[in-house]
Image (cartoon, rainbow, N blue to C red; front, side, top):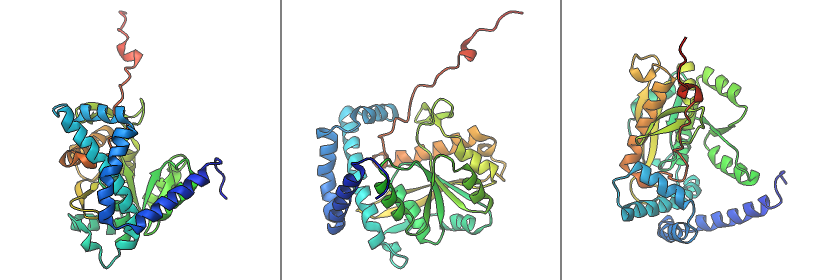
Length: 309
């Protein structure tokens, strides 16, 4: 048994039983159940209620309270449906039938970059089914690496990474993996990153839905430092369960002379704006659970008046 807290393994066993039940149910049944589970999460358990409401008020101040509540409910439905899709995908989607489930847009430019000898950085957010995006990239024969903090429960973390690695998505730990990332990019590999979590007071502050948001600098540094094209992509559900469109909506190439690749802040603002545009199309498929906006701390040195000579 792996090292962990005493309750980690029982929790893992319960979760596996629930996932087995989900696998036994048709996807259409899971979709119907998602509405009931969303009601429990939102109205009974009130999970992250305050954070979600604050985020929606910040992002969509023009919406009425009933409209925001409807958006919140549909978000919870999406999240539970996302879990069922991740569970069902390995059994349902294969290299011979993936067109029955997935529509891929802008294939030519994306494949051209992936087949080149240059490294590639994909950036997305907690939107649509981001797990399915990397799953499909591996299914198409393009292994990729992602950076993520290991889950607190080591058994669940291992099970999730087994799914991710089924077709070639490999996870690097968030701490201590800088050397491996540099080696990957130098060898022309593919790196996929989520770029919509708060980065703390030392992050790169850019505009996101009209408010300053601290964003990690590493993504822009990886792209600019390794001469790697940065591709903004998403996987959006377009119909019923496991019906998705995958699209690469924008590409920033460090070899170009566009303004977005001028420096780290410019590139960070550029891809953050692209993510915002994607989310606005279907905001119910975004995770409004994170505390994305936090007050920007003003440095005392900047606020201190200059002294006369």
